[in-house]
Amino acid sequence: MQNNTRLLIARLVLVGVVVGAVAVIAAQNPTGFKTFITQEIPAGLRSVEKKLKTIITPKPPIGNLTPARDLRGTWTSSIKGKGFQLYGQFATGPGTTTIYEDGDVELIISTVENNIASGTIRYTNLCTTGSTAVPGYSNISVPKQCAADSGAQPIQIRVSGSRLDFGTISAGGGTFSMQGNFTTDIISGTMTTTTPHGVVKGEFHLNRVR
Picture (spheres, rainbow, N blue to C red):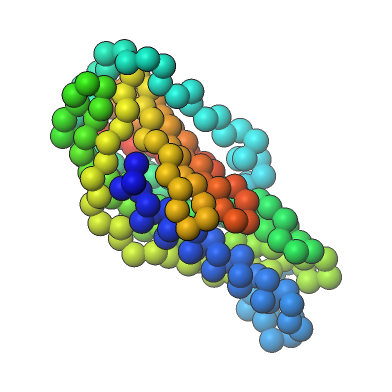
C-alpha cells in the first residue's frame, strides 16, 4: 500500500494545518479573529461525534478464498465529492477539536491474480475543515483546507471472498489503513488514519462504472 503514502502525507498536512490554526487562534486575543469564531459548530461538523460511534471496520480477509465476483473495471465515488467521509474528535490543549474530511476516489482494477487485485487509485477534491470548542472562546472554526489531485497511483489489494484489504502504511508520523467489502456493483469500507493529534476515520463508498 505504499502507493497511498502521498495521500497519507497530504492528509497529515491538512489535519496539521487545521489543528495548528486553531491553536494559534486560541492563544491570541480573539478580537482579531472574529472571522473564525462562531456560536455554533459548522453544519458539516455537527454529526462527527455520532458518526464516530457508528463506524464499523470490516473484518480483514481470512485465507485466500476465490474472489466472490469479478472486480475488474472502474469504480468511482457513489456520491460526487463524498466518495469518502472521515471524522475525528480529540483534545487539543484546553479544547476539543472536531475534524471532517471528504473527497473523491477513482479506482481502476485491471487484473486479479492469486488473490491480488492490481490497478490504479486516484484521490481528488480532498478537503478538511475543523472546529474547536475552547472554554471562554465559544467555537473556533478554520476555513476548509484542500489538497491537490493526487494523480493516479499504482495499487495492489488483497482479495479473499468478498473482502478487501488495501493494507496499512506508515509515513510522516501517522498510519493509514483501508479495508472493505464488495458486491457486483458496490465497494464499501473504512479508512483509518492515526495522526499525531488523534484518530481520523470514516467510510468510503464506490460504484462500478458501466
